[in-house]
Amino acid sequence: MKITIVGLGEVGRCYAQALANNTTLELSFCEQRIAPAAQRLADELGISIHPKVGAWLGESDCVLSCVVGTQSLEVTRECLAHLKPGALFADFTTAAPERKRTAAHEAVQQQVDYVDVAIMGAIAYLREKTPLLCAGAKADAFVELFLAAGATARALPASQPGDAITLKILRSVFTKGMEALAVEVLLAAERQQLRPALYEVLADIDQAPLPDFLEMLVSTHVVHATRRLHEVEDAERQLALLGIGSSVLDGVRQRFSHSSEGLAVEPITEERPSLSQALDWLARHTPAA
Image 1 (cartoon, rainbow, N blue to C red):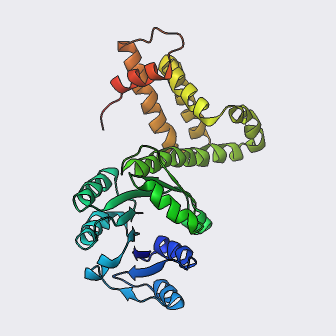
Image 2: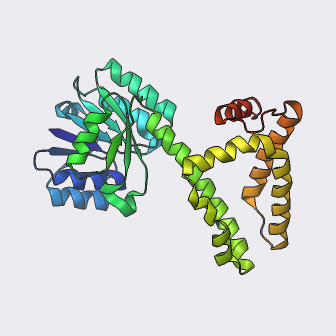
Image 3: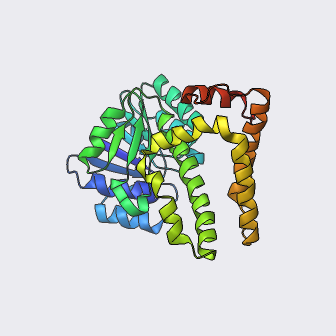
């Protein structure tokens, strides 16, 4: 099988090295701006680097697009102009879901199989073992290829291109929000010499599976948002007294305020609404961007 890697940044080089260990594969490289690290790898593997996409790409069975997200659609189109029917195109970029869906639609027109690949971790630390989430009709075929190269990948069942990167974005909403919150709460705890004690009072959160905990928060939010809004305001005042201007709690207060205003218009009558009921209510009372 002939595999071409377009883009020899950190991601491209990582998987080039992993795939090179499989002697049944023939690799080709394409990079417009060749960094020293990319040239060293190419020299070590004895592979020349094409400066741009061209007719030579027509021999490839599989293409890995490892360019930056802003160039993803342009690069996809350049590749589609030369790929043969039945070729596999794996988009590793961080392009927005709608751009990946557009690229996939255009790939179908050229009879090329498009797979949306989302890198769900830090390549710098885990290298080829970084989890990959893959979406699209041919995701299973791509996963099989990468598992054989020692990578960590799984296909999202019954998925469409754009689904994998959407999940990566949602994961980032959660993890980056938690990261910002951790910065503020640990800083506040440390200033009061209460960090070890804080860990103890948070220990109960570890007792429930994460999905259950998240669903509990949302389903009770629509009942208790007004009361909890006052708690958020108290927390903001407490951090201010410590000299910590909270960026996180300002957004949290706005979220609770929107829900509190919604409850004044449409109260929740159920004592314990289901998650579906809570999400339906929140969809009606969440301001548009």
